[in-house]
Image (cartoon, helix red, strand yellow):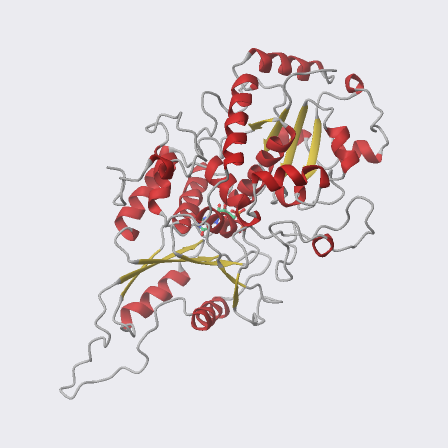
Length: 485
Ligand code: GDP
């Protein structure tokens, strides 16, 4: 009843090869078991060990999560301002920062960190984030309760915060020798746009492991860093033998749009995409700090499309038949291609739609062009805006071919969920310069890294860690120039 796609899938497919727990009520979160029906089958299957670890994690979350006696006890310790010497449960609290794409990359990374360090993942969900996603862990919640002792996250957790790990370490206030009970009640890991001075050397991890409460604020895919750490190498190789699918599996496990958001996705899909034979997603993100004029960006999209054969080709010279009427399309094909444009601006959609109205395609195939919304500006503080953004990330992830804008985490999440290697519209050197080439095919389904790791554990400052050990999944590329804050 849910979708026009086949609903006769075997349970194993419905549960994404065991990735999803069957323990949920399907009506409370319709997207959980339905969204895979809207996509081509994923080329990546989760390995049995990942499935086993997820079930183990779910049991831990139930035992230690909100509502449990162990949780109340741990919160009491947090309130007391001192770290407990021994604690059965340890926690990592994620707090949001930046746009939705950034948030999803950081949240998925935090979950992987929780898996690797046996912590329980909790989410600080301010009103604009609350209710976007379903609960991911059966029989428990990942949302911090209303009476949680830390309330003013934005005010307390800044780069100057005395509980920031960086600041504690630079002030020589903690070391490996510090006893558990002499530590503050929680440690703040500030991982905004920087992997580096952070916390990913062996010695750091040993100190961090002593804290029962940790809060992480980040806007990047820092999961890639764990692949550079010898301590996690073995476990990661067992969890993710296919390094290309780390985010793909984590995101499909963790992120399920709430029923409200799924309503938007479902209605749009049925009305505009379901009947298409081929779906092409085009994400056009024009950043405020790189205000590329419309003609340049549009020209780049067309160059990319021609170079890679992405959008259906138009008949260029309009042939006029002897009787003066316009010739019909030569091909005779009756297939339908839907182009899904997502952008804050309506201009690209308008132009592309107009072009396909005006001329037939070479093959005669029909082309429909759609854009779900055009919000003009980013409004991460508004819940309805974020719901539409999430819906569009999902709709993009249903496309067979995906064209994204370089440096945009919105696009990374979409192609990561899809398990599709995108064509990336490269960022030009300046707003009016020409990007050359117009686009490249990504080598991976993983998100790109937005900053090169600068320094790691005894390595000389400035070393390219990615080149030293080509282990990290989403390798940084030259075109992924670091974005200003
Ligand atoms: P990034 O800035 O491109 O890395 O992506 P983020 O998702 O982190 O932040 C951009 C935000 O702007 C999104 O979360 C949306 O709120 C908004 N936005 C950007 N592009 C689109 C779009 O195509 N559709 C919608 N609905 N919102 C968008």
